[in-house]
Length: 123
Image (cartoon, rainbow, N blue to C red; front, side):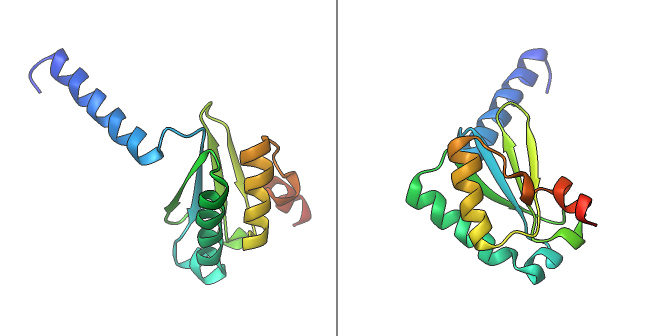
């Protein structure tokens, strides 16, 4: 990098990569797939999210990540919207994941009873 113009080109290239990875969708759905998540059942949750998204053409991209840091609440699914909003769903099952896609992604309604805040109140 030798100039401000070089920096701008690097930034544009990086933004294009992010857009390609995220697919230009309104939501990014992230499944915790560290050892704790997998042991708690994250793989079937991820599979159901991918299947349902493909079947219903939901406006989201499904990705995975490592440890989210709240092992006691696994499987964890985090939903990020294009405006910077963030919702953490916990103790997810394939059935809850399908419901979350329909309610949250398709209809814009957070399912409060599945969120980490609701789980913390029960603790």
